[in-house]
Length: 440
Image (cartoon, rainbow, N blue to C red; front, side, top):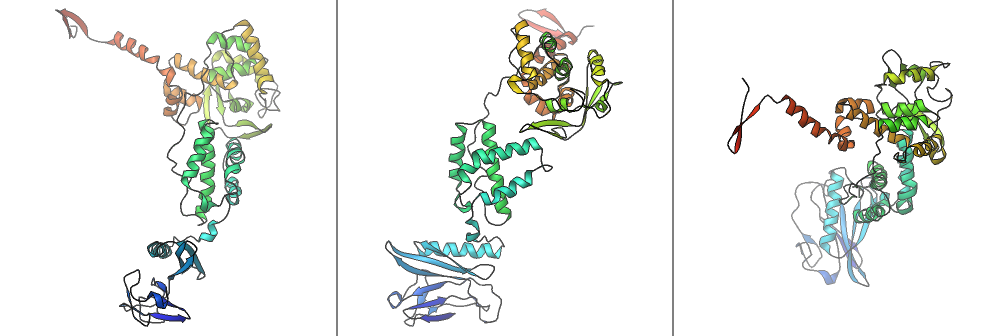
């Protein structure tokens, strides 16, 4: 144990060793004492008239790991904790109202250093925006699809940055994140809220990886917006599809979307070499999406190549679309430029309006609604869920069932009808009850 006279006060180190040249392995408490504080110390050690703390020290090295000193404020006595960081520089934290709180903090620091989990508080006093660029760069293509990256960038700029960009990462509390999520949910859809929360959590994960933050306050948020009823899906009948195609400037594309279930980008990304005319199959291996008025060509959504059949009645129209184009030519359009859907003023919206003049029952719809129509027509024709999954390119059959559960409900009556037709038992009357016996 050592004592250093500092004038009006003495600095005491409670050591746990006996050799001055032994390794730094102890946790010592330094008490700031004056002549008016002789006697009993807060930790129960006794102090003599000379100000020395009487304690027994194991036969190990005495090294100073940290110490606590009191100081006076207008609101009373407070305690300051000083300790050495792993790089051997000194750090301090003040404002503890009791010696117990100060000791607890010093113990936590010591344990975190011994486990290699110590995080320098000064390194956490940096704004969230410092890690946003690094996180966004990690999501840029080819690390993720351009369309997905665009949504993340919008989530950061529109929802995360205005609230959190200038906040120090160490000052963010989970309760604040919860309040933000709850407020955002009153104005935006569940998808937008979860994407914004995911962006904030991902950015703070970068700070954790850099050892600037111990835990992520944006993870494990308890209350999130629930699933709503969702957008009502539109399913056209065969006659409505025929009417829409007849009123369209691109009938072959309309029929392909309605009977093959391709995504818009998959259909417009088809090339002549993607058509297997003998087997009547489309080979889906490219996806053309428009982001900020620019076409980006990449892989399909599930990253997997797949083969999708098309009806025999569509074959002559596909053959005509291939005419005069080389293997690399785009199947739909002029063969060079990818077709675009220009919203309410585009060719598809005009086709819908013209079709509604002939058949008012046709609802307002988008090209993606024809994908839902394809699922509906396939299921009504008797296709099983696995076949529909492969046609649509879903990651799993469970996803297909979850997406189109309402379509499979109609199959229950058909199942009962088929079972009844094949039921090998006959009913024989027997009073008020009915007993069953196998026919001879």
